[in-house]
Amino acid sequence: MLQPSDLKILHLEMNPDPVGEGEGVNFQTVVSNHCHHPGKASLFIKDKDEVVAAVYDVTLRPGDNRIVFPQTSYRFHRQESCFTAEVDTERSRRPVDLATEFCAWRTYQGRSLRAPRVGPLFIEDLDMSPDPVRPGQEVRFRARLRNDGRPLRVDLRIRDRDQVVTRLEDILLQPGYSEFLFPYTRYSFQGFDHCFIVVVDVERTPYRVDAAREFCAKLFGWSLRP
Image (tube, rainbow, N blue to C red; front, side, top):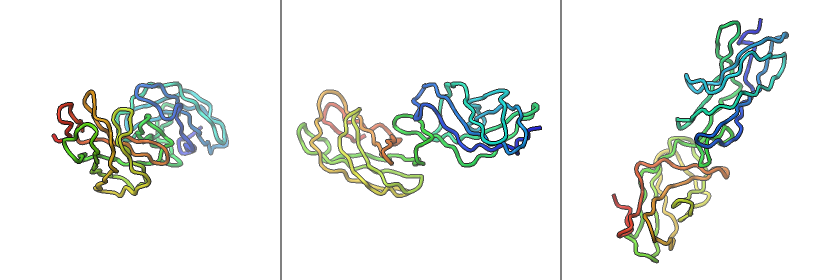
């Protein structure tokens, strides 16, 4: 009879990748069966205690087996989702060994299993000089970031909706707190309020940085001061 110890998850992928908020996703996995005989089993992909995807009564032959799970509308609700796997054989559900860690990280386009491990990252403060700024006046932004992950070589961008306000390229983001002074810009403050976000690009993949508060320059006075 097929045993959980006979199995190993070699590969896990999502389609699409990245997957957007509320978007349906298919999981695919490669399961290695070290037993010399085929066997039937049900497989479950889990995010902590929550079942993300399941497939029932599939035949696992000796060697590598590619398994496609039915589409799921699982809602990713953590900074990172690191998946585990369980197998049910003869009504006994047990964990399956993983060849590596399979984590879906939050990127600017959605969750991705292919993205490098980033963060968590937080923007602690964002200010500008001068403040307040007059229309047509040059302005310079300063951002204070906290990196709770590993060192990263990144590009930093400040965005106002879909428009890039200013950027820094190829900087080293060390663990802990760092302050970055952006180049002067003649960004046009006009119309409605301007609410800024910070985006980091890691290996051409953008990640939005969580903020301690909203950083919005109001219509009257164009100031970022709370």
